[in-house]
Length: 356
Image 1 (cartoon, one colour):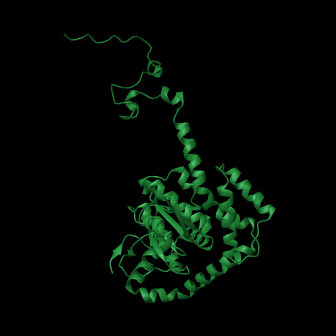
Image 2: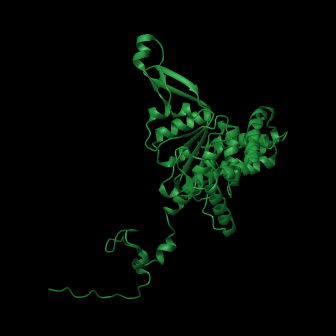
Image 3: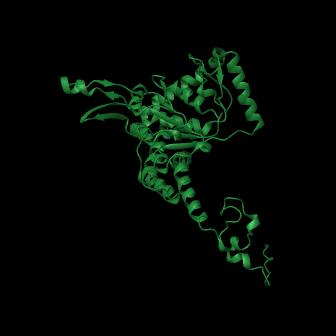
């Protein structure tokens, strides 16, 4: 078996064709991500999970581990250079016009049904592909239309999109459509790092024995997901929960109503996962950050950009041209005139005589 750079908590992951899956139950230091993925598995209509973080923080390992817990255990990966037809499928128009029947060739969305669709570096995908992904993830249906002919099929899957923010961000219109977001960070806790490395080495030494140690916990996850899905329809939102969710979203100054809807559904999924008979404010509090993080972040970024576009005059008054970095206001010799540059001058300084 060969290895690549991803681990249960940020190390190495197997990359052979017959990949042995690191158990979801054995992941270390990934509690927020594990919760978000379980909620999306229980209610795929949440719209998927966006995972942001540096390289080697277990993004793909966790996606593979979740897929193993779902009914068909299917993990479909969308290549970065995939075409729209490969994603959504194609229609044979000639057959439709000649025979009046629709001949549909399934794409990756059809293959991902009841499983996990994993998109690495989703921030580098063309916007049209991201739109198609998010539409299908939220609706559970994929529709292909061409020249007046259309075909629809079920496409209920858990969408997991990962990105490294150092390589670029998603447009605000797209990032908001992801139901939940989790930000991963490098681990600088020595004890946690050691636990991750020990787990990785034990798994590499004997994958079957390692997996056997977590077999009971894995089976329990499968049962909990199945039971939670069945329990969803039995949980109702009362007025107090609606009011609490509305207040949290208003306080976060989010755009639109998507955050309210996702927060309610995520809280319901958490209550179902824990076999609770009612949705409480505690459930809401536990899912709120994953719902609001990317929506609040966009607003903070916009506000910061607006404020930084007009720096205070006092700051400019005390900044001399020699303190500026080249390119910040033009290179040396091309600085714009500043009134502040003359405030410290008490007398007239004669210009040097011009050389002939």
